[in-house]
Length: 429
Ligand code: SF4
Ligand code: SF4
Image (cartoon, rainbow, N blue to C red; front, side, top):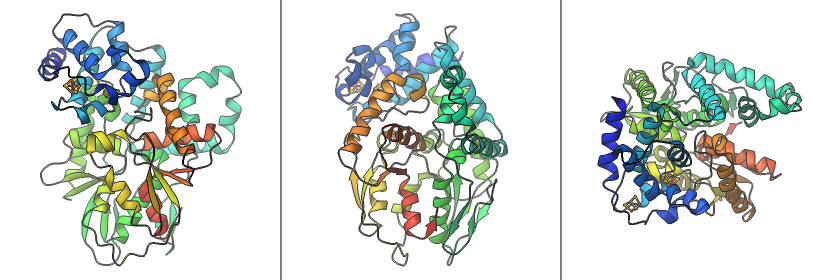
């Protein structure tokens, strides 16, 4: 039943493709593999063939679909506005529904692990952070990496790649504690004259490993007069499920988030990771009365910055544009605007920003060869323009890039633009 529905969508959408090939030079896998079947046009033709029953859904088909990063660079340049993102998600759902499943053993382990993670109750996610932190700080992780079997284990590799996890508090210059130890408050009141109320989306991975960005967002929003609400019933955005073709699970997440935020009666839901932001937006978690908006865009918008003190930072700041921000949300310019608020800071686009870094959800684990190849270009771009900071607005990209830079012995801090701004406004992290 689901397959029939997916096939109809694929046929209708893929028929919009006129095979002009304008998207090909923008596709990272086509540039790398030089194969039509690994290009957007080729993949669309394959999807059309499978949906129409002309070609079988076999291992080869699965391989070409799985090699797609879902970066949507093709969609952003398509003159016929073919919704490639929708097509690839539906094609993956056909794969999930088919008997072959198309997943290698390693993929299945990763997927199972991440699925379990995203399905965990938010409170358990908070506890997970403590366990990961203990693994990192007691040296147990380092000790375990001596064993070959453990080292190759996908679960271990995922944890080993996490950045150093800090306890989720930060002390502002005025000694105010942001969120208390292991849970988030439901409300963080505005400072001074109140300008409005916003909801904040935490995310499942970010609430464990990117507390710094979440703290920074609360800090900046409060300082600007916004009361921040964090509904405890919010859950994973569903992007990982969506891009694996598990569309029903993604819809369940969307419904839960919708209901969690609807109770707040706010007209803005802020997301800090652009990957989550796209998913929240496209799964209609917001509505005509409540907009989902990326933190960069919100802060660069109609905000009164005149009376806000921001310390100078006379540094070059390299800016990485995540695909989700650039190709799907279309808001990569806002990160630059945010940095321009910091006196003397100079925002410089990272060379090759139109190409994916390779992180792409769990792609960096499942298609590590292609992912590492793509990351190499980013590392070279960083090397070609040395600076102290690399900013990016998506946690997945931040983790993958930071890991590559660390491996290469390159000392540069990878942060979210809002973190840099919060620091210059007095947040001590
Ligand atoms: S640019 Fe659009 S219409 Fe042209 S080949 Fe690519 S997807 Fe098809
Ligand atoms: S989403 Fe990215 S990797 Fe996939 S076909 Fe489009 S440009 Fe290529």
